[in-house]
Length: 175
Image (cartoon, rainbow, N blue to C red; front, side, top):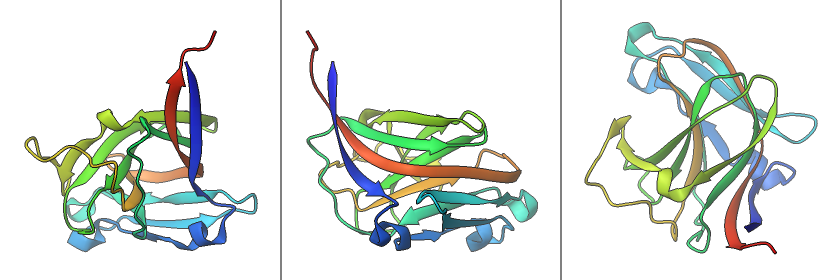
């Protein structure tokens, strides 16, 4: 099989650099902290500290809304360098930030660049971290926000460097 990829978010683009914000467990009384900064080599660095105090335990970033039609693609390919922890890729397919998120987990290898493919079929609907089994499937023709989250009681410092987010499409078999 060969694949076609198209860039969605590349941090060489100044517009992509500014279009992110942190949302941590402080919204519910927790004490986790995160930030996203752009490195000298134009990658995004999502880093911070996850605290389990006050029933907290998550840190996240997400892009500001901009509609993308990815219905012609099978999934996302992210290029990341992590710290060996498990992260979530999060997608929102409505203009309602407080609604359903579609989530897929991925594990990083410490200090190694990885190209991780996440098929759209592996994204599961959640609401405030809880599964929503009867929610509609991810609507790939209307993706408004992309995000990353660390949770699962992984307390302590974390670091995820993000080079790009691309959509991929399988184009057929190679000879």
